[in-house]
Image (cartoon, rainbow, N blue to C red; front, side, top):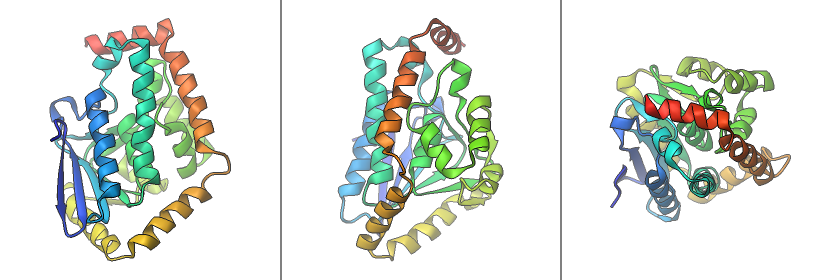
Length: 251
């Protein structure tokens, strides 16, 4: 049914695995469509109480597919960004708890997916970051806005301005990651947490999720994300960004 992901269900727990390991699970347009569809399906499936999201190979997800980025028309780029909003909303505002099980690189859009989940469980070798600044861009999936909900302003600036990679231990210390475990224990820990959540009242969990979301919104997220998307679109069309994207894609 899906080209770039798999879904397994057992005892009320669904495991969604990103499966494009040769590209570090980088997200192209079809891949994004599949994630939006499966996240929506999980939210509407009464047999599913918890959703674990992970990646195959060395990465959770290494962001957007820059080769496809470089070949997009302006209209395709804007449509890709807009569709991404649906992806993050399904995880963040849906009925079910989503847990990001980060097995490797979670960069750009991959980190944004992880941040939109309710919890992050990471292996000791996982690395996180928002490297868009290296392409003369800004994150376009809510990365700037969700990050500031999780860390101090100065930490957010450090992560965004420098565009570096950060270890799971560092992000655990900063309160972004919930658990850090050895790689061989990652899925066992994820199942342990998921099984506890699956025993809780689905209605209560849905209400708690909704209330926690509301508590983080002194301003409407859509309004701030619209500004973020507008900034990204403007930057994407500059000569500097296009040059950096083409250089990256040609490597």
